[in-house]
Length: 318
Ligand SMILES: [Mn+2]
Image 1 (cartoon, rainbow, N blue to C red):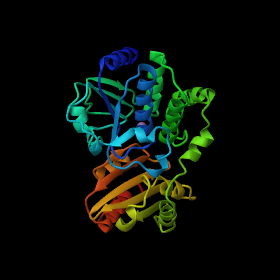
Image 2 (cartoon, helix red, strand yellow):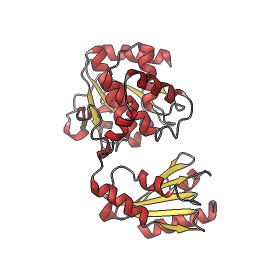
Image 3 (cartoon, helix red, strand yellow):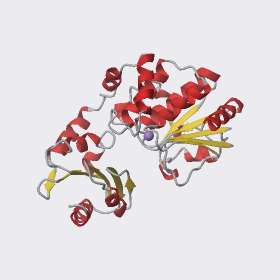
């Protein structure tokens, strides 16, 4: 890892143009790790970079530092290509979306990721699937290269770790906590950072509450299932994590499902479990994910997908 990081910074110093991208519909780790690294390259080497995204950035991330530095991929001319492309937190090439064109046209590609990745696209991979967030790898790079950081970098890395670990619920080892301890000593304020993300439109929060209130319960209350219809889907900010968390707090609920009608006959399925693995259910629907947090996108009607999910649960786990 150290050797790869040194090689990365050699590439950076020799590059005249650099593009960075994370995954489509960025989450906190994807957005903030990209912005943190772009800012570090400017701060330490005076290098201007181009940061691209595809899809939507949730309103809850609108106030993160340097948010305006990342641009929608269609608004940037990438025809000439770049000396160096850095793709972060993407997991699988299909998740990159529009910025893929800029990456393909670049002379050298580096990836920095903490997802298990069966099809890496880069010549240099700084990957660590044990890291709790891509930002944890970025912090390691800062340490190895002896880079200076500032308050904006520290805040971005902290936001990435807070969001990707669900405020430390999903850490897999102590590293994310040690990085956060360093960032706290540097001066970040966790409470202020969480407050900064309380920025959803009123309609989004009211929709989340209503979605949870209208949930149905199956199998003696062990399975909670909520749905967002197409007319409401546009108001959802992010992935509906709040609904899943809320239903998961109910006594006796073991499994939580959220069905989102993204388009006619295109249903996003999010599944959570409080104890037993459910990723095989997501896989049976054509998706995948972690043991207790997984999902899929199914091309069928809401009614049919609901029936398919309930059948799978009854057959496989309940
Ligand atoms: Mn991540």
